[in-house]
Image (tube, rainbow, N blue to C red; front, side, top):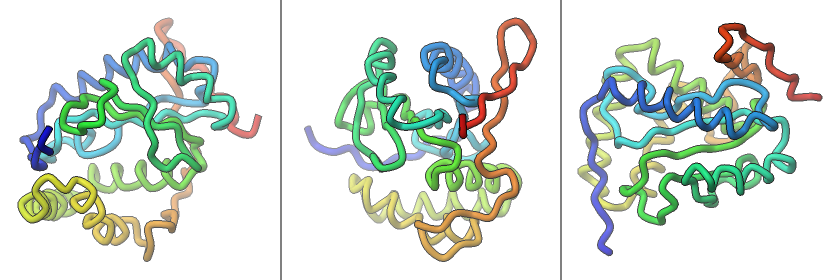
Amino acid sequence: MEPVPVALVAYDPRWAVEFEAERALVEAALEPWLVGAVEHIGSTSVPGLAAKPIIDMLAPVRGLSEARQAIEVLSGLGYGHGVHRPDEAHYFTKPPTDHWWERTHHLHLTTPTSLLWRRRIAFRDALRRRPDYRVRYEHLKRELAAAHGADIAAYARRKDDFVNEVLGVQHTSDAPADRHEGRPAERSHPTGSNRPPVSPDR
């Protein structure tokens, strides 16, 4: 199958609704390993920002070793286990396909102190706060999509400098300074009460 060129679509408010529905399923399945709420990240999590229509999620877990048990559990929800930054996350796609354009969801299980968690959450929050960042980021993404066509790796890699600028760091291996880093949000429960997250040090 020929690779499909990167294509952005206008922001769709239904992405937030789709995330909430999927989060409910994922949090129920991952209950034994979670230490906080599953987070919506990536461009579909930023109102007003054009994006590839894939829901990206981060799930905070106590540790990667014990969370390996979740691989089989998530397969029951239609997720396939892939490889992306295996030293700090378990990565899943839905449906389980090698073709990125056929996916509807991406999910990383990682600790809330990991570089992946800290950078992705901080970048999302910065884009939500700053309209100027959103405008510049969308312009960059459209330029890169036009320049790199179906080369999704080059498209993603060429965004690194902008991400580092927004985070106030020099390299992709640098974590942003954030007094809230490592503190995932509390999960909401059907009873209406919020149960405190389990400490990641437990």
